[in-house]
Image (cartoon, rainbow, N blue to C red; front, side):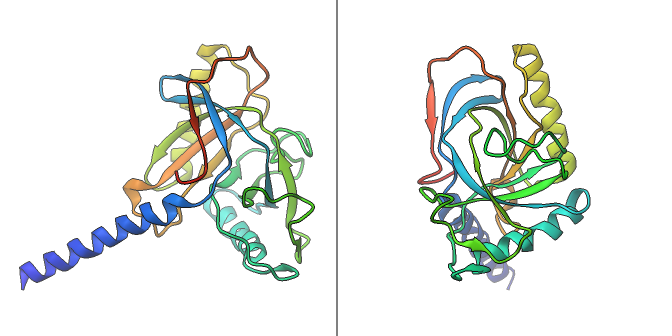
Length: 224
């Protein structure tokens, strides 16, 4: 009986890991090129992409829970003409209000305060995306340019994001790099993903600096 229980749990564990890697690990994400690496930080140059964003009412997890269904409703048919859009990653959260900079880097800076955003599928544009039925959903173009990113695994708790942001800003200060906007918290997996394989990042857009020779490249497709 014990062996049967252990065997069943092992099968379920393998299935859980397989789901995380083979499905969530292959969702589309914005394209970028790594131009430098220092300590645990990647300096990336992003290709412009489109997001659907909405204001977060409240801080931390309550704010996230309130904003998520608004955006999920849009991609699952809450639009004209009722198109269902492909799931992509990451889900973005701007955790501090900033100056309104529409169509620039990053558009998640708004005078209204904190926002959550879903990245739209690659190759989609403002012109061909369906119109949201909810006036709470805003479609915008993100043209970050160069971004500093630090990653961590596990559950994307707000306090863990804040700790990673402190670590990232410390590296930037010692590197002589200046941020051009507030930090953005990115989650690449759903709550159903296998926790040790979850990918979370803190992203900070950077002011222009001297060009660096690319050392590696990353792309949303085929995977994380």
